[in-house]
Length: 190
Image 1 (cartoon, rainbow, N blue to C red):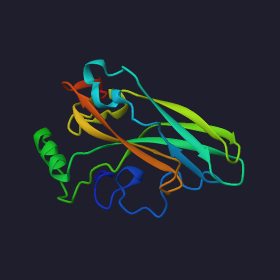
Image 2 (image 1 turned 180 degrees about the vertical axis):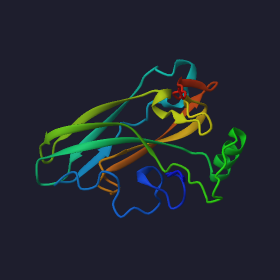
Image 3 (image 1 turned 90 degrees about the horizontal axis):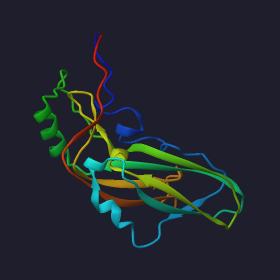
Image 4 (image 1 turned 135 degrees about the vertical axis):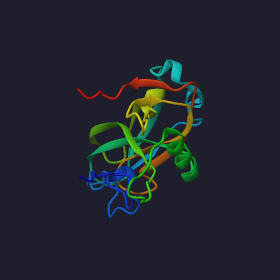
């Protein structure tokens, strides 16, 4: 029996598919929004530690209703590991992960780690929301063991209102240091 692998090209779901017709979360609002963060970006994002995977770094995001209609907005928080395709392939080789079909395994485009919904944002007004980012927020699945792990790496955080516009999205860098820590072991077979 063949397994349905979401990573095999052309990819499945928002995490792997390269050319979606609509971005994940599109069409969630009847007005437009712009996202921004205060400068400078939080310095704690440069030093998240796997040893304290639950230590919180707060990221404030300002949401402005730039349209003419009051509306709701869902702000989506994603992360993406900045490994190159070659680094992903080397990681899979170290872990002994093989694709039996020989087809290309894709790397995750981005992964959702949090979201917040704001209700009835008045036209022209601004509201601030806070996302709590930890080393476990950017945890990934070890492809061989299936364990959820927090590991050293460079990440991009993306905050998006699902509109697919530059005004509705912003990005920042995060760095995780330390030894690999298993946050949640894969359930063993009984």
